[in-house]
Image 1 (cartoon, helix red, strand yellow):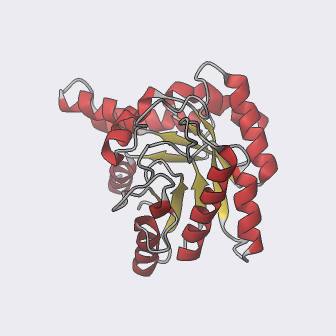
Image 2 (cartoon, rainbow, N blue to C red):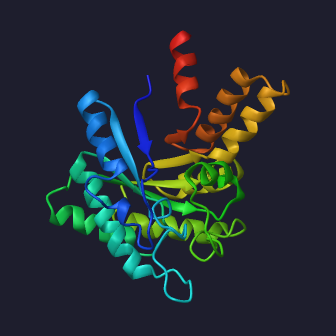
Length: 255
């Protein structure tokens, strides 16, 4: 009963420019083809970012001083998005927060007759501590510094709305707020201001807190997970990306 998946990659090798991320035979590209062969009706979304593929863990390429270079990073993200779309992904989801990447990806998709490929933009992605479990699993934490130079300040709601507006202007079909629970107000404000389909990412730290508390008997897992996802929906999200998807699908089918 799960209608869609979002793929993120654990590559066999990493380098300074994340080349395994835009390899036509990379882990995500091969996974897309395998999924579409197994179930053509499954909606396949792919995360477009370099952090899982770079040996330094940043979402773009670095100069000699360790600064992230925006425009060279966008060029590589375009290659990555094209390779995912060519493999069969219906939606590509740039999550890097580089400036101008949505417009560049949209232009490249349209120029290569991949006009039906949609873009789900991580438009308001905050520099959050809630990503910890994922970064450990993917071994993608920055080796030096952090991502506050290109991800959003958790205190700055107005910048989040401005970033969403920019991504819509550049051609995003869906915009997303990440994380979800600590940013329900951003989801609500985005829903009130924009007509574009709105997604929210219920991230690994949010998932881990519930799972850890449930394992200790502090929470009723089968009650709190639906309550949590309903809160995200009530705030205004049309789509929810969540690690609870399989559990929710199983419970909904049983009702």
